[in-house]
Length: 361
Ligand SMILES: *Cc1c(COP(=O)(O)O)cnc(C)c1O
Image (cartoon, rainbow, N blue to C red; front, side):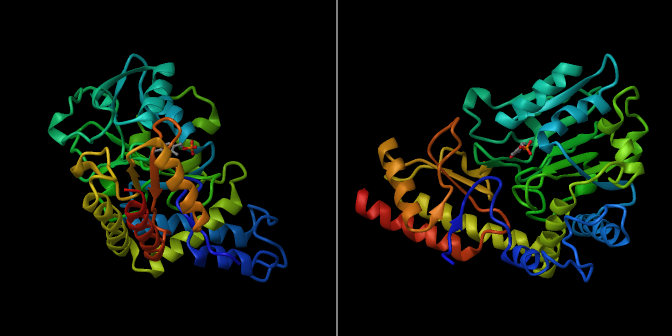
């Protein structure tokens, strides 16, 4: 088998241990004589797996009793709609922190069903930074404040989250969920499409504050209500069981490897290696992001010309590194180095970057 270092932004690389486990038990899962894909979601065996996955999320995040873990479908994109449908009361409005394309999609969905205003926008600065918490203009009557913790396309990431007081805080953490310890209980709702940092596509992990649900809107379709899924532990209808199984494997891997504190050390080490190369070769590489806002998950960088960028991506691919092309909306290069990316893979890329600059600079 030829080893490829996978830098795709999502779906993205998964821990080898999680994949190997799935490989080993694909045809006979836990002595059932079936794969996990084939067993009823109402079976005792599936139920145990489902709850183990929920419990692992709660344990890794240190959730209090008022927070509930959900596994939903429709991606982070459906959360863009579900959050405002459930939580902006008729005549009300919510605040959005505009840090890139995903925030833009989120506010557009909110505006279909209610009012939404911008608490800050980085559009005028090409989304090259995250605001300082005191730059936010928060409406004290807002239904919630929505932020994107990591901007997958622009390569910016929050380091310190704002204290929004009585206004509930909502986070789209699709591309950095579980990358480090943080106070998850300060959030009223967190959502993350699994396919970047915690599993395959097909499932979205949501953490919701149960007491906030008491203020949620009625009169929306059953499947789009958080209360439905909380009441049934995400088993109201058939869940994406294989995706949840893979998420469970990934969560076990995180736990077995020291939990979120260990992930943070590992991830910061990888990011420092890549930004170190970029900063050491300023005549060749350039990171468009302000230093204090640089993402530990998605390292974006430019080369002197688009021709050299195309050459870089092609030669990296030939050398066994895939997925280094920047998002089509911004161009350039991007290395996504989520939890599962081995430090060795980052090292291979960093050395390749040094060598490429030497030959082409
Ligand atoms: C990928 C991504 C999304 C969209 O996720 P889907 O699961 O494709 O809907 C939303 N927000 C962020 C921050 C993302 O990185």
